[in-house]
Image (cartoon, rainbow, N blue to C red; front, side, top):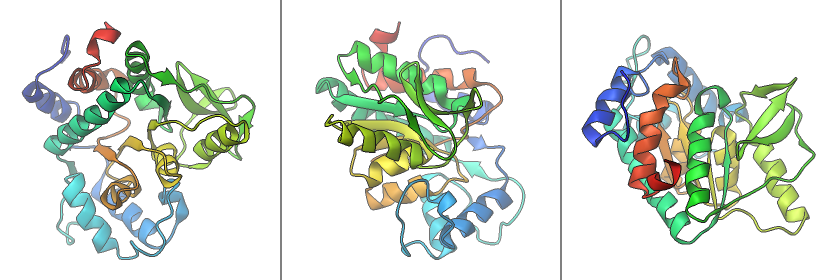
Length: 266
């Protein structure tokens, strides 16, 4: 169901549900609850570059935040089967993110874009980078020669990614963002004014004190907890790897239009 141009808010809500970016998403309830439990039990893989301490050691507290901010079922007895992301919450978060992008454009700020989910979100970030550049922002160029235990930290189409074995790599780790920010500081270069990212890229940036906005699936609760605490400014709930990355195009168009950045991308 292609949408040409920029959808209205109502059209985007329908599109998100129809493509399962939101609504009845593919991530099963049991997977969501398993991740909430592992985060609460201190498994740092699920902390996405954040330092959560013992503040979220009760998985029911994690579930409550996810129900409020992502729209998953708040029924603790619902253990298996379908779970949901509320499309209204997705669009509301996109509108909050648009406000931060508008601020970046108005101030011609330095912006770093990154993704740990290149199979789904690379082009969302690429289009956002292009729009911000056209509006006068500086898109941060990352230092050369960066690596983590998982692979090399690279930049393609203005988006930082992890590369491993000549393949763009899916990662939850905050280490790639740590490598970038540490290298910028070592070289005496200013840190970004804003990071637009997902997974540990967004989490570590926010933990490091950089303004951070990002996208997160309903089985990745850490960024939503960080938004609740104020460490991350905006977290947009969505399925971060649907059948086709083209399904995200109307969402991206809406985001950029709300930010007043759509002219620069046409």
